[in-house]
Image 1 (cartoon, rainbow, N blue to C red):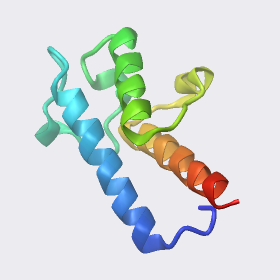
Image 2 (spheres, rainbow, N blue to C red):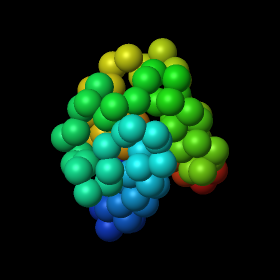
Image 3 (tube, helix red, strand yellow):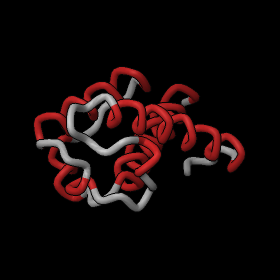
Image 4 (tube, helix red, strand yellow):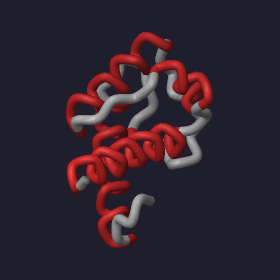
Length: 98
């Protein structure tokens, strides 16, 4: 991804997953982090679309990125959402270096 070393990407992915799991776990009625995996479907998290948007906003704020809300409908799993955040972070890092 945009010439970021794989070791850095791995660390970034883990940070995104950790934050995402923490936010999901804070959602009333949502799955607990120990029940989650990267393959968990977003529709199976036990939260409504408004809460999912709130989680995305929290991720944007925490990682200082912007996510195109129109793309959220294309996301199926926790991994898809994390991958989108990592991709935005990667793009932002490249923009800073230019």
